[in-house]
Length: 146
Figure 1 (cartoon, helix red, strand yellow):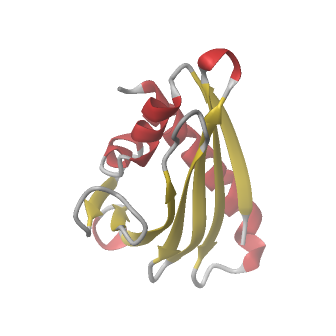
Figure 2 (figure 1 turned 60 degrees about the vertical axis):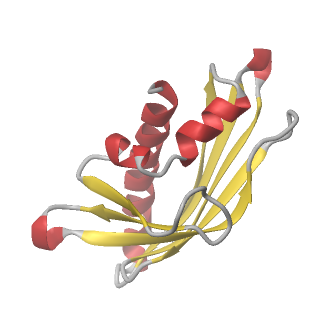
């Protein structure tokens, strides 16, 4: 079960970085072959649920997620969102933290614990490398696009 951490610095204030990273439908634009469906009414809060459907045709799977921690940044304090992955295929958790960075920028820390049901542990290294690349690109795209 690979656990990894990505860090990015963005030329955005805390609120804007948070908005870009936690606007769940925007993730579909940043992740190829993925659609996002929010299952609970806005605004996002603890208990909010959404599903990312990735793949093509019969090779698709759902990544069902529930927000278990929702603390947007306030008064210069960091924001933290924790997602629990509750699908039939993808399990684990993700945390997105947005904190003050140098020169008025935002520092983003994205931690992920990723498990794929029925995938042997021998594939953990390949899964981690693939996930690190994919989530790193996703974070970059989300932070670059308004």
